[in-house]
Length: 389
Image: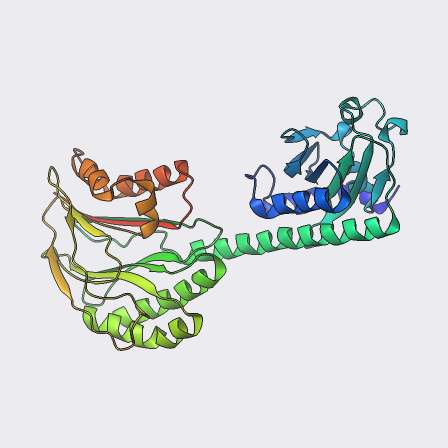
């Protein structure tokens, strides 16, 4: 019995696979391109990236296998590749007693070659395989090429694991509970299009008792945008505690200018400060343009722009604006990922304003649920602040 077949090793292998969180995920172009490349390189009609669970083979990507999703472990050729943890070649599977009576041979498969895929921690968890309907051999050069292609798939698996960890960290720094502000309800959510993204929201109670809220959108997606967003968020929260609204934005822009210049990017920002006692709101909209006030039974009021996004022009001057939240009013700020989901955002907000109660948490959850149903391709963020009637 090989070490990979011992019960303890099998348990570690399955645990390593489950930790990656890849099972039963949606198809991804980054995996599809590897099976397409395998077919082209080896001149075969079919190829797949398969992962071997405790009781099944699950297919992450395939070409030429009629949409194969999963098969029992007893039918899996890739399971044998994983068990032996080395390249498995079946020149004619119909002559191998392990597979001669199986479903793949019955469907016309004759040639199979698979190379194991490993988790970042080293356990064999799956296989990159190529398949043909006629018997054939695999040369030494072919074996080397299949192994090299499998290593590239492993890199994607590892990168996905890193992105998942980054996503966990990013979500941890997002606010999970809203501060208690008597007479107000506050809610917010951020859902990146990829594992991580450049949107964020933040809030804090200031020493004066005022409530500070921010919504920002860094140009771009993925890890670079997320890193810039994390830096910008930290500077915003620090500056807000010791400066008024206008000086806060000016200092944040100055402190971030080199970062934006060196990365050739920028960020839109909506930053507002509420006096809870009066309902007066002072805000700066730096190129964001997606702040609204909803009043029951009335059309939404779109809040005015204060100037350009952060990072576009050094030493840019922004203009602070004022707004007042009457009892029952809701401040809603979204990122531009919301725009792609509606033919007209103002109409969508008007319909929301016609609801009997404008609950902040429900507005946020409804928007996020809708974005997920639409399979949003951009980061989606929404913040809602409601003054109680």
